[in-house]
Length: 381
Ligand SMILES: Cc1cc2nc3c(=O)[nH]c(=O)nc-3n(C[C@H](O)[C@H](O)[C@H](O)COP(=O)(O)OP(=O)(O)OC[C@H]3O[C@@H](n4cnc5c(N)ncnc54)[C@H](O)[C@@H]3O)c2cc1C
Image (cartoon, rainbow, N blue to C red; front, side):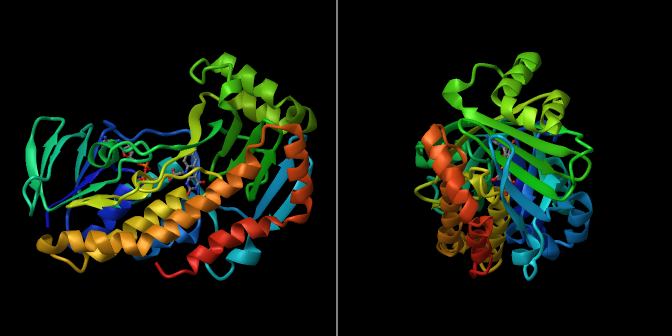
């Protein structure tokens, strides 16, 4: 079967690795000329990381990440309102592991190593006028026919727009900036988020460094992330209360060597497939980071697609795509909804709403948020 995967990110590489196990070698076109280190880390639940067992990469994954033992939510002045021991609800499914995106991509790329990689390449044309094949034009001018085209080109998927039209994003109106810090004083197993009024700060330890994230409403953003000094000053100003309460926050901001800007919006595709073209990962259902399940769902979804494809030949590809959507859509969209629900509490602008949220947090256990995610892991997929 001739398979083209557009996008060599989390979903695309997972799919390529799974297909290799079936004896199928996919072509991967990745628009980046090479993989470079990016300014963020990922929390992977067994929901997604479980796929690595089957790929023989789970130990490598554990060695490259950090098990998050404690998850805490504090208010905008640094007072801890909730503290949850992850072990109490992940004991029977496996741990939540923080890993840099770069390290995860390295592991997946290794697993997908025998695929046909075309770096620095995109798709400029898709022709589905013939029933049994997709005609593809690549940015290097070559033309090839494929039995299946998988769009795994991320949340801003151009393939989704060209095949299904524009899908309106769901926007929280906030922006997060992420960056790496050393922060040796921070406990390696502690993830803590500070939910303020008009501000957010998160500390997520990975293997040798700590991912930090600072957020504000987009319309209050008065600095550009590319101007490092100006951006640092802006983050310091928005996190002034926290810096006063905990000097480690100020140190983390001072350590930034670049900020990765991330608009807090997601998207949901109305349809996942048309003919022999299918969406996978964020291209189908994009995620806010608020429940930490975007990459997990990208991996789980890719594995679900590979499994459906394992039972068809080139002539019945559209059936596999239909079954893939039936099998995965509800669980993945439910997780997306969980992320949206958490965002409503996390990103609060008004003083009274933040005060009410903080009172609620004192009595509403953080476990409840995580429990919904855990429940989806126990749902057949
Ligand atoms: C700061 C940040 C923190 C996050 N934290 C978490 C977390 O804690 N837990 C979690 O589970 N998820 C998290 N996520 C979300 C997670 O990264 C995504 O859900 C996941 O990467 C989706 O995988 P994907 O393969 O669909 O897309 P991506 O991993 O984004 O990969 C898409 C790939 O397609 C390539 N591409 C794009 N356009 C084209 C094109 N036209 N042609 C060819 N290639 C193209 C891109 O270069 C990229 O390599 C986070 C995301 C960010 C930005």
